[in-house]
Length: 294
Image 1 (cartoon, one colour):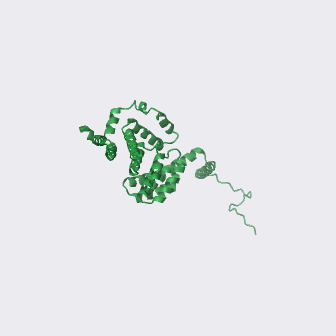
Image 2 (cartoon, one colour):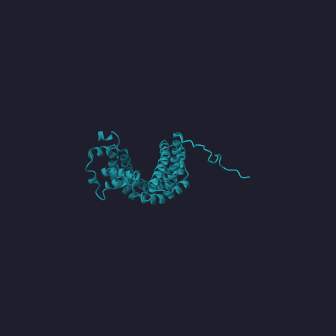
Image 3 (tube, rainbow, N blue to C red):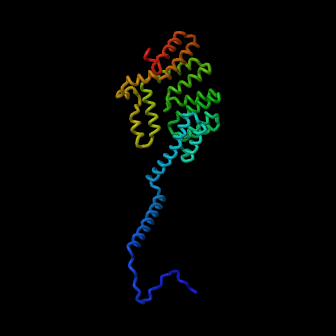
């Protein structure tokens, strides 16, 4: 026996009149059609995957991963390394190629004596980092120092020279390794270069621009920051700034006092008491408030 799927009887011409469609039915029908059109449009856009949608997705992923990365940084500053590691791992689960997080996670592993894991992460980050590898080589140097592999540490720090990494930090670490290896002349040269960079007003400006280029490396800001970076003469780039303020900031830098102290120690080892005394007295002039009485 055949059963019709329709529950509406066929019009047999018996004079039945069709009821007009109500406004409510029209509205509901229009809503469903609109929803259907939206879903179809979303499907088409997803299939085509236009550039603007890719950018939007990347922005969302970057923001979410950055949220956990920032929490990790807070824990790192508090020296709560295990908590920082948890946050960095979550960030990398969201964005596996987040180089900054990979490096920070490696640093956290170094502080918690997980050296092999740290080394693997730093090597991985070298493949992803592009041109800005200075901070990675610097942290590799730090790792090799902890492992008492001085030659490897020196080689890594040397690769960080001329990079975006703060150069005075690189030279100071090299000086300390040279000193520990009995290479006093090289240690003195590296410390003098440390001091030259620390007392050069253009050095802080250079570091600021490099850090900005790293933080805002997208197409919108990157070219503008690059235009601010002179190819040769950094002193001319500072012409628009108040050098007295910059010099005052340099005078307050206690790290310069540390460099002078280390120079004083090295000259003492070299039996050059005159220069040892000179750098000792210079060390007293730097740091917050010290220059007032100099």
